Image 1 (cartoon, one colour):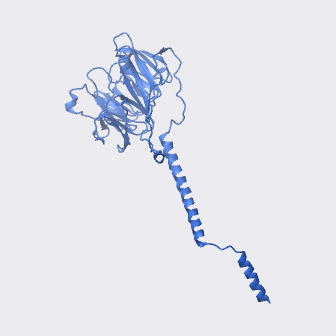
Image 2 (image 1 turned 180 degrees about the horizontal axis):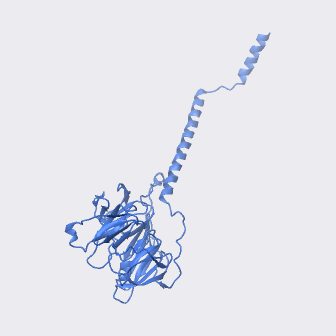
Image 3 (image 1 turned 60 degrees about the vertical axis):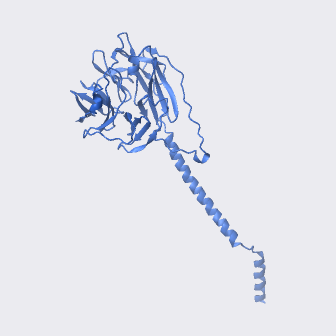
Length: 371
C-alpha cells in the first residue's frame, strides 16, 4: 500500500516539472557571457577615450584669464578684430572620430610682420587667431622689438621715437588688451634681440646709454639683477638658466654654477653673418640652440644648431629638412621648426611626432609655446 502511494506521488510530481532544453540553456549562457565581455570592453574603451581626450584638450591648471598689468599711462594701438581660421571639416566616419592626442596640444605663438603692422598669431590645434596687433608707420622699433612672454600672457615692444628708429618707449600689455602701459623711456630697439625675457614677468632691455635694465612687468618697476657686462643674454623658459657671452666666451649659469662651452659655426656660412648667439636654452642648461647674428642691426629669431654645453659638441638632430628655428619648451620638449613643418622631440632628442603648419604661419617666426 505504501509502495503504491509513493509511485503515485512521484508520477504527479514529474507531471508538474517543465522539460528543459539543454541547447537553449547553452545558448542563453553563451549570450550572457558575450554581454558581460562587451560591457567590460566598452568600459575599458571609455577609460582610454577619457584619457586621450583629457590629454588633447588640457588647458592651463587654473583656467583663469591673466591678471591685468598695473595701472599707468597708456597708449592705444590699432586693434584688429579676431581673425579665426576655420578648422578643416572632418570627413572621418564615426568609427574613426576619436583621434590621438597631439604631441603639441598647447598654443604656439607666431609673429607676422608687414609694412604697417606686427601681428601675434595664436595657433592651437587647427585654429589660428590674430590675438594682438601693433601698428606702425614704417619699419622701425615696433617690428624689431615686439616679443611675447614664454607663457603667452604678455606682449612688449618699443614704440619708435623721433631719433630715426634707434630708441623709444618700452610698452607692455596683456595679450588681448587694446591699450598698453608705458614702462621706460630711451630704450634701445636695435640688434638681433633687443628685448629678452627672464621667465614670464622679467624683461631685460638696454637703455640708449647702453645701460642694461631688468624690468618687472608685474610690479611695474625696475629690479636689481642685471648680470653685469654680459652680452647676448638668453634665458630658459622658466628664467632659471642664463646663456650669455663675456669677453667673447659663451657660458651658461643658474646663479650657483657656471659652465663655459665653445662653438665653431659652419665656416662656409659664417662669412655671410655678423656672428652667432644663443637663441634658446634647455630647462637644465645642458643645451643651447644657436642662431646667426645679421650684419645689419635687425632682429633674428632663427636658430640652426644645438650645442651640448657640457661637451661643446653639436648634436645631430633627427629629420632631414632645413631647420629654421629650435625652441626648448617649459615642459621639456624640443620644437624643431623645419621647412616642411615641426618636429617634436623629447628632452633626450627622441622624436615624439610631427606637426603640420598651415601656409599662413609657415614662414612666420615661432616666438613661444605655452603647454
